[in-house]
Image (cartoon, rainbow over all chains, first blue to last red; front, top):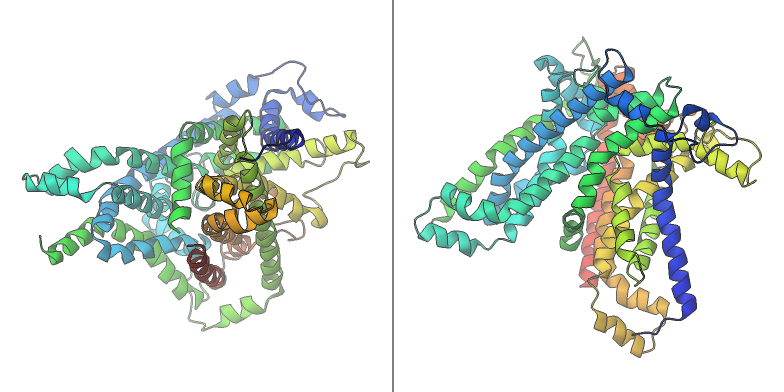
Amino acid sequence: MERKSSVFTAFIYVCAILLAAVILAPLAWLFIMSISPAADLAAKPLRWWPQAADFSRYTQLISRAENSAGAAFTSSLRNSLEVAGMATLAAIVLAVPAGWAVSRTPSVGWSLSMVIATYMLPPVALSVPLYMGLSYLGLLNNVFGLALIYLTILAPFTTWLMKSGFDSIPREIEAAAMIDGAGLLQTWRIITLPLAAPVVATSALFAVLLAWDEFFYALLFTSDQRAKTLTVAIADLAGGRVSDYGLIATAGVLAALPPVLIGLVMQRALISGLTSGGVKG
Amino acid sequence: MSGTWMTTRAWLLMLPLLVIMVAVIGWPLVDTVRLSFTDAQLVGTAGNYVGFDNYTKMLTSSNFTRTLTTTTWFAVISVAAEMVLGVLAALLLNQEFRGRAVLRGLMILPWALPTVVNATLWRLIYNPEYGALNAALTQLHIIDDYRSWLGEPGTALAALIVADCWKNFPLVALIALAALQAVPRDITAAALVDGAGPFNRFRFVILPYLAGPLMVALVLRTIEAFKVFDIIWVMTRGGPANSTRSLSILVYQEAFSFQRAGSGASLALIVTLLVTVLAVAYATLVKKTAGSAA
């Protein structure tokens, strides 16, 4: 290999520190804002580090006192968990058989390609009839209705991931079980699903991330605490008349925690999931 | 087992997915087409058939052309910057240095941050009275007075693009890094022995490996950027003076704020058509790149 000069090494370290700073500075600032007293955030010149760390906004947001900022926040947190949970579960239930079918019977693959091509559709192209449809069914401002709509985003994605997952399980193993007299369901239960468990988990986590992040449909189809999700609640806070910017930052930190933890824990699996599309082209 | 039974079984297993997809994507899309030829309102009247009136009205309105230009600028600049920064970061992360694993781990953070939280964070950073950007730039004596970064048409779009890039370039970096790690070491070593300089090594040895994955990232990011709604809605709502209004926001306003479902639907389909043309053009390009890289 090339012998690296010390100038080059120094250059690499400078760039690495710069990159780390670019990534971390905005995130660190979000957290610092959340624990800075309101007076520090309004000070000129701005106080970059709080005189005393103040975690009261966290307790304030998690409290459930009526008509408080906390009540709106906790109900939106619960709605986000419910919608993401239901939509993910439904997406996986649809994706496992469909992904397996396409993997083992490539002649039906064109239908999955069509489903995946819908990724190109901007949500605005579906939003008007979906709004009218939900309204007709009485499912506007309803977590079930929103979870159903989220399948437009989640189901194509999870099916595609499951299909790639099943592709990497040799069909000979399944064939062997079938020759030994196992039916399709039994083969799935004993052979296929245990082998596919990691892919199911990755797909589910991706689906949770997508649902947690969704904003457009939630903005359109929810209107109060019964169904408003976290993203809508935070946008309300950011665009509203809240004078304490630290409170907005705190809501942001809390909403970011679950996906960031998932991201860090699942790093390897998420990256291979993200790049498999790139490699397969 | 016979082939017909295999195929029938495959269709049966796909049926639940296909039924749901027809219900939540297929039918709404068809209904959007129907609505686009009517003067239907969002609530109340079903509307009458008006032919192509909505389309001609939308396509000739100055709002549309202006919004199309804004969206194109947003998409082209943010995606180009994300690509360049992403590849540079990947080249850096592919070098050996202490703390590299940690830095690679950090790259997942902006990607995992919810879009709305990212938009809120940057909105706070750009705040005209208390924002960190104003504070930092004044304390460094780069600007004399606090500015309203999101409140002035001259800077609002650029400020949005910075926020979008910060969230999305790490993803490009991770995709490019995975591709870089697939480049066999003997090939780069051989090019070095043959006396290829850093630029030529990048251009002729490394780039062919990057081209495929990067093209896919480019396609996906461009489509996303063209459909952009969330980050702009939270940061500026398309303002000031509509200078950051994207096509998706224009459709939202037409169909939901003004409740004109018919013309909103026609506008939505025009956007869909634009994205589709873009995607098909890109797909052809991807196939070509994949062919030449192999």
